[in-house]
Length: 182
Image (cartoon, helix red, strand yellow):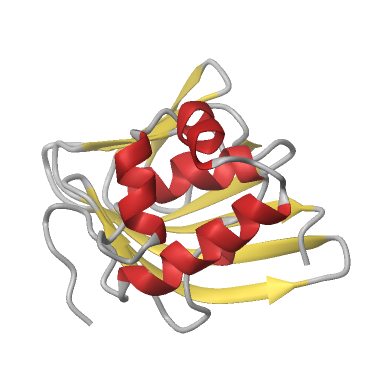
């Protein structure tokens, strides 16, 4: 699977688009309504749903939050590589339980880069365990220094950000738990 620096998901956009459309329609949302809530263009959403455009990581998260679903609900269940100019992420595991979905990612933040994440769906919790490198996590109004061995958990239903120091790549395991989805 290949992934471009533009942040496109390496799997075909048609799969993600079909899933977005199905979930949007099951929620009774129009294309215009979801685009407005997600803060993306209606044309962008239309092209994504029709498979003419591969979604970026930012677009997937922007859509997942308003739909109330985890990222995994919008993409194929197989291993997934996503990224953008600041971060590469490989999904390692997905666990579906009766009352939640847990996603586990290996995350690499490029030196000096910051990855700003939009708010996830209501009630989502996130945990980060740093394996190597240094940086900062901005979450819940606090700035948390990141270094090997640091573990931090926070409410991810509000915007948050990861930054790597200029000295090197920040590598961490990111665990995202979305309630009410199984």
